[in-house]
Image (tube, rainbow, N blue to C red; front, side, top):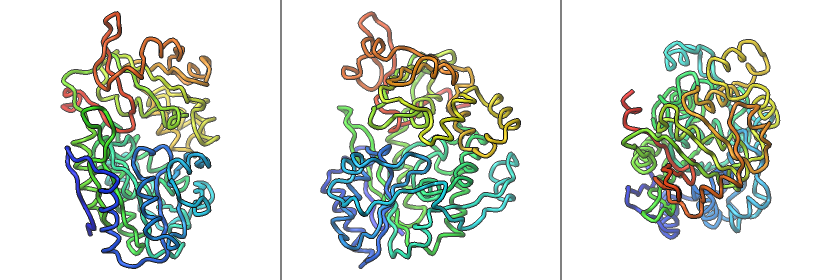
Length: 424
């Protein structure tokens, strides 16, 4: 059921508009006294989920019992991040999701179904895992808040991904990520329906249909000045709510270019991107736009690690971003990688397969560290002098000596492709 929907390519929703839409939905839901909120973490700061969480707290007040940020495999939020993202919400309401320890398996998707949706590429069964607070918490309303935007693993982010990945466990996250990697990132990105989503939809329909989950989903775009604005708000308890948001997101967040890009400069906000686990969105979201033998340069002042999870960080350092054949070979030969399929999927996603070069300019990692995982390295300060983010506009730019390049100020808010790549 849709409780509230509004939005278009030209809509710009204000804070008051968000409040009106959210509270209109809450009125339809009726009285609730045991509310769990599942927002994204700080890596989705621009989703406006922080504002929507604050508004939800102001509406339900003592009815809010728990707030569980959907960390997935990410590091727990810091006190400073909680204060900045969720203004005026008491810190004692927040819970930390431990993806290795805090989960329960709520059902198992049979291998036959996995084989069907992957065209026979995989036939393992898939455990649908959730944080035990979500499944056993006894809440009378579970608000899943987030942003629908093109995504490298599941085509379009949010909806039930916020639950089964954001509050999921090791096997569920690992295997679902690997389904996406095997099927092919470029076949998935920007597609609302794909094998990974089908997996999660099966679990939603068969294992958690009794839970009082309501999805609150934003679509974020840029106005003519480059400022981020809310283009849509969709609130509902079923797939239709997500489908509507995804349709708008494709119009707002997917930029199709006439020709492949020979040189792309991406800036990673240091408060949001501190690992290649997240920073590789620079690669994921631009790969369909990159020309063969093109150059991708990533300005990453906050980059200090590869994986936010210590074990995944170790695996990335050991095996590196060396392409699909090398990763699959390592997977077959090393049990430790086989037990961490999300890491294996990430290594595949983070490689250009030799088609274009990837240069990281990190704020904290060394040249040796960057080159050890098969990226190129360049000095951040020198590159910031040549490419000045504070003076650039999103899109095509030129340096003082006439070099043309394409600039992206935040890869997390969009997806880019050339027309010819869409025909392939």
